[in-house]
Length: 181
Image 1: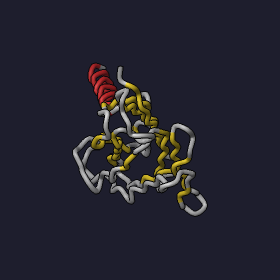
Image 2: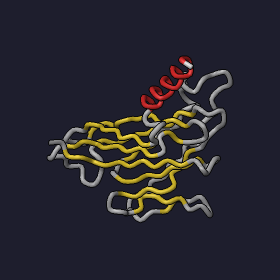
Image 3: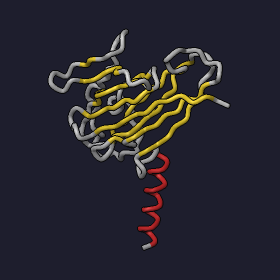
Image 4: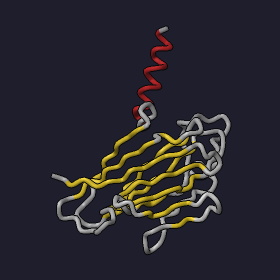
């Protein structure tokens, strides 16, 4: 019984560390300067044929004087690490800015991306992310091809992603700014 308790405690501690496997929600805060700065990066995971966490919230803290227009003061980059024994392919499905303007929408009938915004649509397709090699654990360190290319998010808004191979897998990323006080 003691061994089972330790295993459950270790799993829960690991889930909390990984970023919300238990709650399926994670709020991350990143600091940004008053001027546009280099990107902030976060790694998320694919495991058990699901995104982890399912809902990922990011607040980029900005000063009162930041002047980057509707863009984030720092580009936000996400990558996904594949911990599954099967390949995945991550695609953007829908991206909206905080005003509801569609930055990118993937049409399921022909897999093309459309948008309302001028200056290009938000479109992401990771290509195939290789399956975790046999004999390795999901927590073992791995790099490409088991990790996706980075997706760059330059505007606050709501971004939805899915696995093109396993369409039931979906993740929403909410990116917002918050004024420093």
